[in-house]
Amino acid sequence: MKQSIAQRMRQARTKKEMDQGKLAAKLDVATRTVQRWEKGEQVPDSNYLMRIAKVTGVTPHWLLTGEGDLYTKSPAESKVLPLPTSRYKRVELVSLPLLSSVPGGAPSLMFHPDYVEKYITVDDIKDANAFALEVKGNSMAPRIEDGDIIVVSPKLEARTGDICVVRVNEEDTVKRVKVEDHYLHLIPLNPEYEPMMVKKKDVTFLWRVVKVIKSV
Image 1: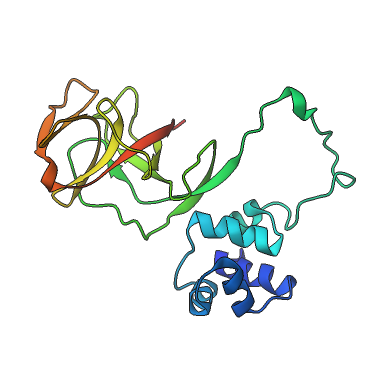
Image 2 (image 1 turned 120 degrees about the vertical axis):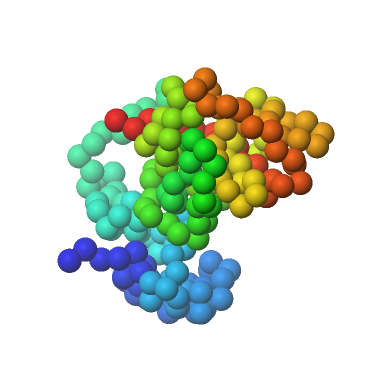
């Protein structure tokens, strides 16, 4: 039976001969937070999972998925020849939580930011609070279609012309935005859908989409 993230966290910690308090101190969280993680009562976000992997010395991929090697192989153990790094740009891979879906059609009920369905690995994301959402609907087709995954960066400022995840009047949608002093225009790319104009005071957040992963 495949282990849960909670069980892999506990295994990584005990193999490092650390108690929960010591791990909590290195992560700058309360000991009870680590206890909840290891009981499966809560799931740490992608930032903390990456830090747990670094502190305990395990590979992030194993910690997130249970697959692959527990520890990074040394160059002598690896059968893969390293490429000369001076000739290639280094690309940093990060694992992001994939939350519940966001409508790419009419606005719908809110996604839940605390519910992680699974994790995905992407490159070149600089926001530790970034996350991914699966799109439902085709209002943003052909750029973003039903089943595509979008990566959202809450820290980046959204400007006119950006594609954003918008929460307005407790409903969520993904649209291109036009920002005015008191109003926000939500513009679909699919001409079969009508644009909307909402008051900025009714908008809870406006988070920029920084990457689209097409469904195959």
